Amino acid sequence: MPLVFAAAASHAPGITAWPDAPPAEQRDAVRAALGAMRDELSAARVDALIMLSSEHWANFFLDHIGAFCVGRGAGFAGPIEPWLNIEKAVVPGDPALATSLVEAAYAGGVEPSYAYELEFDHGTMLPLHFLTPAMDVPVVPVIFNTLAFPQPTAARCFAFGRIIGDVARRSPQRIGIVATGGMSHDPGERNHGTIDSAFDRRFLDAMSKGDNATLTALSAADFTAAGAGAFELLSWIALRGALGPATGRVLGYEAATAWATGVGFMTFDAAKAA
Image (cartoon, rainbow, N blue to C red; front, side, top):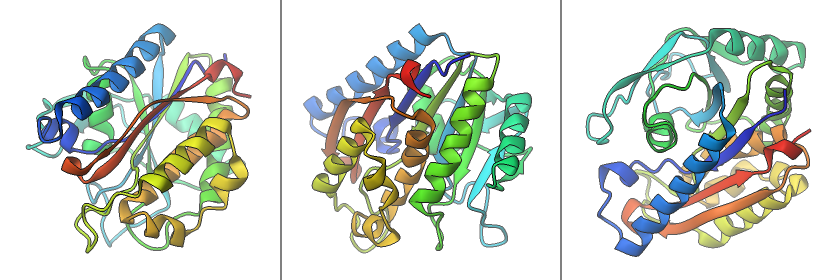
């Protein structure tokens, strides 16, 4: 069955934790972009979502840091942050789809770790809060190491994304893929609050056009220059790998200084993914 939905969304926690911090027009633009994304998802009638997200020391620490981790559990509780203003819930998983993803990755030369017990933080729960507010759509989380050096390369994430896309297209279910994270920000670091809108707009343009050469050439130094949080865009590059020639549409971009993050939102013509 073809991939039926694909999107990318920033998960800045301030979107729900401090919703009134930015100017009203900026807040409303973000809500409108997320609403448009939710409408597209609803129309796609997905059976399950593969969520490409980021580690924020919610599940792993210095005792274990892997490049990727696939959640194989039957359910995932979240959010772990009590201040996020999102009601706690248990999001259903899809162990069979997760197992297919792990097995395909190993067969394809990418060896993600996997876990039957994961908790969700804002990286996953915030997009779900807007996209599936009833928290009733099964989710397979794929967690990317975007915190600790060395992070997986852009090219490696793109290659993993190809495998994820193949699994989605082979599934008998209607599958959607959502990448979450970024854009430019430097949370808690010396340049906290810095937003590189020029970098963000170049990245959105490359994602929209499927300029894979530009995306896979991005280096650790490129992400670091846009802020430590920009490594979260590795999940977006994985999504681009899953989509083949499908083009994208930018639903909105805001340099949200009140949330110390450049936030962007995109959907893609998933029917043309191959």
